[in-house]
Length: 377
Image 1 (cartoon, rainbow, N blue to C red):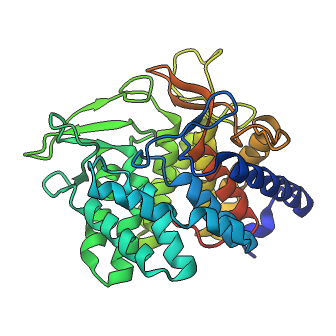
Image 2: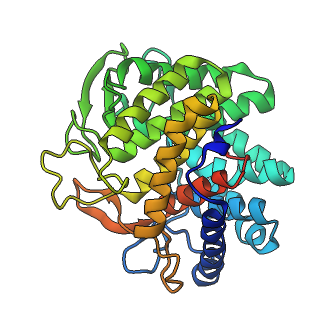
């Protein structure tokens, strides 16, 4: 018996969701053309620059749709994105720790599904770039590119290290895996708190590797708990276990997952930060919930059915609430799938909007419930 047999969702319910998702994405393909979407604030996605960290999520969603349905128009719409993003390496290079997001969801999945040699080359190029950001004294991958912040590292990077593990397998070169594991070890030992919560930013001394301070970043404060950061930690640690088989990472993922689940409100959709002193009227973040749900399903896959039940059940309750209470599946004119995403509440930026990564992880998670097994993060 697998964890899939313990579903609280009926096949009829899932099939209904999937039919609506296909109709919705088909409409978005027609509406959005070759835009690089990030935020939909009024039902129309913006067109962000192609080297922005979110540029892989829309084509990644299309690759999932192609793999699930076999339909050619999804593949056609997704095909050129890894080449478009790669061109930014040849111009002003503004890439950083998020090349995993950008190239896993474009080049790597393209190579896995089609055998495209250029997709493989671009994925390996991105992995090599990410490995080059590793600080061996501190055991962390550097975030962003500001010259005054050489010791900054963020929890988001846990989702990007999967490209290192893929490269290690593809090349038979353990160096990439060593970097990914070293970063994950640092997160386990110096970032994840005993209760399973995490800060957004950890500042290291780049010369000694010592932790200097924690910074709130997109969270409420340095000691708070930004919900999307929690989701990155859940999913990133689960993936590190998937690639390495080291149970320490699975246990870390479970610890963060227990914390996340315990903090959810009645409708199972997270607020933007779990430790705001008064959550009354505070915005939700559906992108955190969809990403966490996909990460919880990953954890469940690696456990016996009964042991994995808590994670799968929580994920399904989260996805049901997102679908019934926060989705636009019945509003075909609206560009975006999930409402009530929060980009950065501290800077009052992109609050109560649709976010393309929230849409991606929602489609990914529902696809997993329907048996999709080619997850690339």
